[in-house]
Structure formats: structure tokens, C-alpha cells
Length: 385
Image 1 (tube, rainbow, N blue to C red):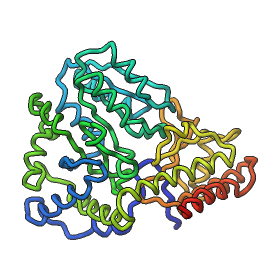
Image 2 (image 1 turned 90 degrees about the vertical axis):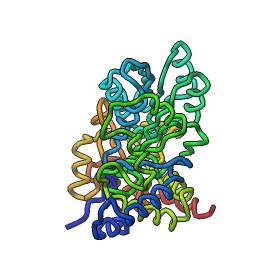
Image 3 (image 1 turned 60 degrees about the vertical axis):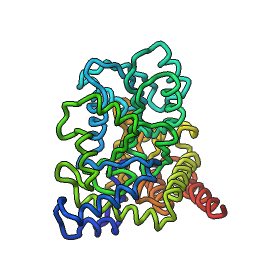
Image 4 (image 1 turned 60 degrees about the horizontal axis):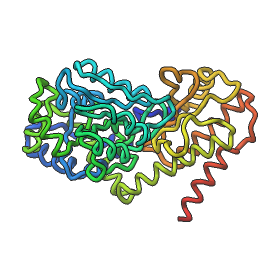
């Protein structure tokens, strides 16, 4: 039985070291053993966020942490701006509307980023905005929004909090929460963090905490003040995802072994370049520009003349290579090549090689080996640095 070669935008492959860490004997979350684990892990993961603030761990998917960021900071009837460049920006819109917020939607065409000029023009006529929500890495399109620039615009043109969904890139993309002025930054376990689903991580600025303290949210399970209170004791208010936190400790070990988080970011940037150059060599179009391309996922347009559903199904059945298709209005028009977390240049070369094999099966015209050769040249060039 061949293993599936999972090149999805999440869930992503789990390192053996992480699997072994998660299989350790269970213990109570109200013991000194857990307190030591919690405090150690939440300190070691701070470089992933670029913050000196405490990291809170929620036993949930990333969506719950995004909801927590909404319900704890903004009251019903208050005005917010949501930047959406794809399906997951629209998630933020839905969450905000569900809680009765007045949403001003800054919407860009799928495949385009939101620029600082876009946001500046959008904010100018607005007043009394309580929060601006943005997606750092849009999973549905492979766009990496210029979050540092957007944060500057938010703080220059409003008193709003800047709240960022980093679910599909934190752990693989640069993040400097404190330096850039992000007030709340959220991620999930099943993407670049190399863990199974079920754990979300959230960091908040001092300014965000002041707003939350004044807001007095009615949330119970997602009450961030409760998480902060228990975090001071090295615990969580409710039963945490203990096995995943054990695994997170192993993730931190792996990042240390790679040479630190900066090296992890370099690897993701390298894999992005390998994928993009390989597609160009195969005359297959990319959805996004190089300027705003994600380091964790690449959106690839359907090769000319191919039925995408048949092609992706063929790749999975014959070569055990599993890509994700498009979402929403991009369904059937793109597929998504995940290269985040436990993924390395050799994995990219393997996936491109199998892609080529599938293209040959469908009589797609290209120079055999062109994609692999292009990706390999990018990789070998990096070794000379």
C-alpha cells in the first residue's frame, strides 16, 4: 500500500518526531508536569509570531480563534472593516455579521492582494472603525497580503485594532507582530505548524487587552480574559489538547534543529520559488503575481486542454499524489500545491516529477523533465549561497 503524498494546504504531513511526542503517556492538565510543558512551549513558539506577548493555546480549529478575536474585541452594532481577497477573508465577514457587527467589506478580485493604497483609500471616508480584519495568507488563492504595510495604514488612519488571520502561514512565513503593529494574530495547528488539527494559537497586544477588558464580552468558552487568567498559572481554563501541545514541543525542537525559525522561513521561500519556476517551465500559468505569492501554497491554473477533476483524480489514484482543487468561483479553474510545514525541496521535486508523469498520461505537450529541471536549478542555486 503506497502512502498518499499529501501536498494540500492543510492538513499537512506530520513528522515522525511529532507523532512520537503525541503518543506519550497522558497526564492531567492540572499538574506540575503540564504547567512546565505549557510554559515551555508557549515561550518557544513566540519567534513564529515575532512577539514578546504571551501565546494562548485554545483546544480548537483556527476558526474558533478567529471567532474569539471578534467576539472579545467588538460589540454588536459597532463598525469594522474586513479585507477579503478570497474564501477565508469571507469567513471573517461571516463571523462578524453573525455577531451583529456593521461590516465594511474591502473586497479584491480573487488572485489579487490588498495593497496599502487600497486600504488607505477605503479607510479615508470611514470613521469610528473599531477593528480591521485581514487574512495574511489567503489559502484559496495563494496570496500573501503585505501585512506590515497594511498595519501601518490602519494605525495611521484610524484608532482601530488590526486583527490578522495567519492560519495558513504562521510557522512558514515571516511575522513580526510587535514590530509591525499587529494587535491580534491567530494561527492553527494543521498547516505550517506540522501538527494535526485541533489546536489554535493566538497572541494579543497590550492595546488589544485594554479593549477586551473594556468590552466585557459575553463569551464563555472563547473568553480570552479567562485564558489569560489561567495562562498566568501555566494552565488553560478548560481541558486542553494535551497531546497536540506535546507535539508542539517537538515542532519547536525541529525548528531548532533546522537552525532556527529564520531558516524555516528560508526553506518555505525556496520551495515557493521551486514550484513557480517549474510551472513556468511547463507553460502552466500561475494565479498570483510573484510580488504577492505565498511561501506556503501556490495556486496553479488548470493546464490548457485538461479536465482538472479528471487530472487530479488520476494523480491521486495512479501516483498517490494529492493536491487540493479550487474553492468558490475558482473551482475547476485552479489547483493548489501546498508546500508548508513538514515539506522540503526533495518533496517538491517528487511532486513535480509525478505531475509531469500525469501530464504525459493526458498527452499534454511539454518537454519531459522541464519542470523538474527548473525546480532543481532553483534548489541547486540556493546551495551556493
